[in-house]
Image 1 (cartoon, one colour):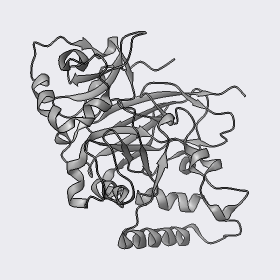
Image 2 (tube, rainbow, N blue to C red):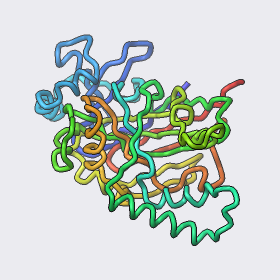
Image 3 (tube, rainbow, N blue to C red):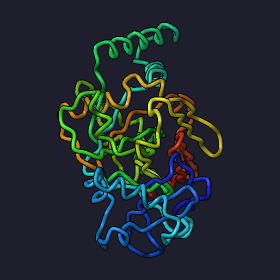
Length: 332
């Protein structure tokens, strides 16, 4: 089952966006979507019945002018998006995730995760966290780790909460979609390697973030973040040319209609180009890869209210559209 997209979900910045769609019981296909809520099957117009979104992104620079022209052509045959199923917009080869990248969020987490025996006042622990963030920024040390593509699901698909997940939490993020291979690129060069942006909800089971059996080895991102469907993605890839400033976008997550996260990417410690450049220091980023840029304050640990069966999350980002997912508790 899945939550059906509505007309509002088709709204995004610019003249077009990209999506991966399917007719009922049909194969998935890459599509060009326009703000009127209609979609154009790129397999037919580009002459390749086996075309995928990765193929489009692999040839991004050459295809971009063609995509602009198709978006401006009212004569092309289009289908209402509401008649189609919307999937995650891309199946990436690699997923790079960023932690501790929103200043207020990290301070909140630092306060929430009080160490045993730490009886200091909250104000003192907040000040300590702020000092740590200032030091990280000064020393230019982003925090990036690897996620699994198998955790990705569609923007309207149900999210199964594993029976073992004791504290499942939401984390709305802006995801960068790579359009050109990037290896050891500078911050100034990074923007030229970005095809566009989409929305990710990087779910985390807080109970398994830190290893209890051996605290010395630190975080366990495999267990806490990579259950199947733990990364709802999309609905659209919005090209970089349609987003004036990715470092000034509003992220809003509502849980059952109540706003839980509402913050600007201005609060990011390390901006979009810095995150791409940093990841490329070690790894070769490939077209279609995702760089998740971290999540702002307002997660479940902050509110003392974590995800449970029947919850509906609605995540929106300025110019990138809306995703809506229902939580379903797994039967043990």
